[in-house]
Image 1 (cartoon, rainbow, N blue to C red):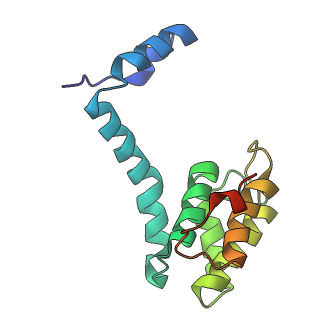
Image 2 (tube, rainbow, N blue to C red):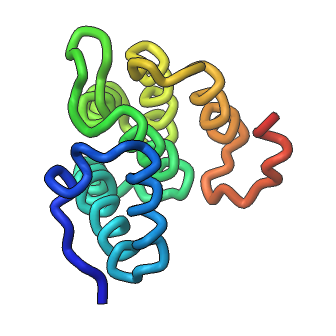
Length: 149
C-alpha cells in the first residue's frame, strides 16, 4: 500500500527534478489515484452539484460546462467585481432564468463577462460550450471535430 505524505513538508524544498522523481515513485500507486479522485470529487464535483441540486439540472452538457468552470475558475470568487467563481456564476444565472437551457446560456454569457484570471483565451474556451449549447447537444454525443480546432 502507498505511504501518506505531508506534501508541504516532504516536497516544499525540493528541486523540480526531485519533485518529478517523487511523483514518478507514486505514479502507479492506487492510493495516489484514489486520493486524486477523492480530492477532485470533494473540491469540485460535490460543491458544484450541490449548487444545482435544487433545480435538478443534470444534462451532460450543463454538468460538463460547470465542471470545466469549477476546475478552471474555482468555486469561490477571486475578485467579486471581476473574476467570479462557479458558485457566483451559478447563483446569478439561476436568478435570471427559469429552465436549464436558459440557465446554461446565461451561465456561459456570464462566464465570458467575468473571466478567470490568467486562463488564456476565455472566448475560445467558452465558445466550445456555447456551440454545443446552440446545437442543443445536451447528451454531448457529438463529433468532436465539429467543436475543436
